[in-house]
Each structure stands twice: as structure tokens, then as C-alpha cells.
Image (tube, rainbow, N blue to C red):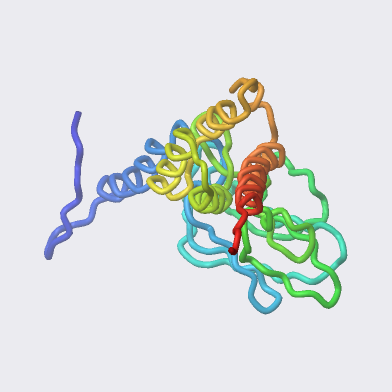
Length: 257
């Protein structure tokens, strides 16, 4: 095996073979690194709502084994429509030019919740007339607020073998779980994993955690849940632990002599 690294120096001729080496290492390395991942969001692409615009941050997306590098922020304008709108990424390939093959991705809003074969979901929202769209959350339960909130629960996020939940959703759950009382070994282990991976937890790991918490549930059954169902199971855990804390506080009795 031979690995060639072009030398950029004065009086050196840049040959076409050197350009090919640059091309191959630029994309082949990323494609090899993420070869086992499904299509979807790989990294970054944080979404902000600013003055009637959705801003998609820099990041990486994978579609049909090609890695799309977003080196600049993208913007999509939005308006309140009193119905669900989905921010979609659509991928197109153009090989009409003999000198190169163009891989394009465009972002747009669609009122159709279903995805096309060459599309993935970035987020969705239901914005009412006279309301402002927000991209921050009070707590884990707030992430599923129906109106006027950027919803990341159903976003298409790449995972190893199976798509997984958005890192922002998982991080919010991990932070809230850590602040709860009466955590068991599974809770501590899951929180540690969330911190170490910045929320990028594989779906099978989430399913294993839920299976342990739900006692009778099995991993294969949970793996068949869609993102909304997985989120609801996680929300139940936080809700039940919160109720336990309230009951414990209410059970305290102070006697003044």
C-alpha cells in the first residue's frame, strides 16, 4: 500500500495525480469513518430561530454514502401558518457536467409531514399567528410543546446501524435525570454516557436503558418504537421521578412545640 501526500513548494509542478490524491483523501476519509452510520445528521447543524429565519449551523449530513459538509450557515424564512411545518433537507445529484459530479443539498419548509426518498427532517414546528418561534426549552417535557416551539424529536439523526435521537434531546434528558433524586445504577451510567458523548447516544443503548427501567420491556420491542414513542418513554421516567420527589417533600412533617 502506498499513501501519497502532495508537496506544495516553490518550483514544484502540481500534477493531476496530486489533485486526485487531495480529492480522495478529502472525501474518502470521511466516508470511511462514517461508513457504518445510517443516513441523517452526523454533526452540528444546530437550528436557531432569528427574526423570521431558521438558521442551520455548520455541520455534516450523510445521504446515500456521501458526506455533505456544510461549511457555511444556511437560512430559511418562515411565517406563522397555524399548522405543522417541517424543515427538510433535500439531496440532489447532478452528473450532467463532464468535469465533475455535483452533490447538492437544499433546505426548505414543507407542510407535508411525510418525507420523500431523497429528503430528511431537520425539525418541525407549529407556529400560530401573533406568536414567536422559540428554540430553547424550560425542561425535557417542554421539548414536545405543540405550539411555537422548534421540535427536534422526529429529526433524522444518523446512528450506527439505526437512526437515533437528536443529541439536543438526549442531552436535555441527561441533565434533567442527573438533577433527580433516587437515581439507580442505570441512571448514573446513562448520565455518564450522555456527558462523554455530548448527547450522541446510539439507539440500541437508549433501548437497553429503557428496557432496564421498564422492567418487563425488551430491547427488540423498544427498537421498533418511533422517535416520538421513545421520547414519551423517557419523559415518563423523568415525570415519575419528579412525582416521587414531590411525594417525599410532602411527606415531611414539622412539629413545633
